[in-house]
Image 1 (tube, chains in turn brown, yellow):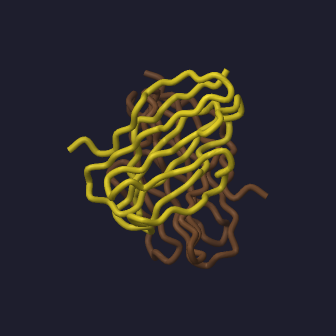
Image 2 (cartoon, rainbow over the protein chains, first blue to last red; image 1 turned 90 degrees about the vertical axis):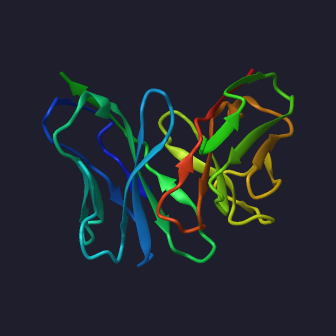
Length: 116
Length: 113
């Protein structure tokens, strides 16, 4: 089974609209972390936001928020008031807390295109 | 403050050739990582170094070796390149092994013919 599933290969969104990028995960570890990264066409990976499995509140960073629904094992990224510069690939990733496990498992990504 | 730097940016190899990808960070981070990114597969961890002097295998270590030369530098070596190793390679670092953020380098695009 896939550890991280991103079901939207591509999305087109009008500028200034909000956008939700879906991410579901699979783990039996009670302690884990969820990450979102942005990869613009230039290729670098940019950290956006982090949510710990024990965090009581949803993480927020500026225009980014993470809609964390633990029972449903989903960690959707919400971008408010989208901008042209938000056009990029977006990756969801998970780190499980098993001893010695430093691995980030990435999903296959969603390509977001913002339309002017 | 350059962050994480990688050399080279691009490389073309013939099957069987060897090469070393270099990575350096100037953030005084303890942990460093090597990933590969293939189309449609996200990033996969090749090797990581939780601290200077230690290295461990990740998800796809076969065909690679690493050296944590010092706290700043973490190199990835392909001893005998194969076409299946055609990929984009990313180096990353974090302050501690379980830090909430990994900082990535710009990547090396490697083609093996």
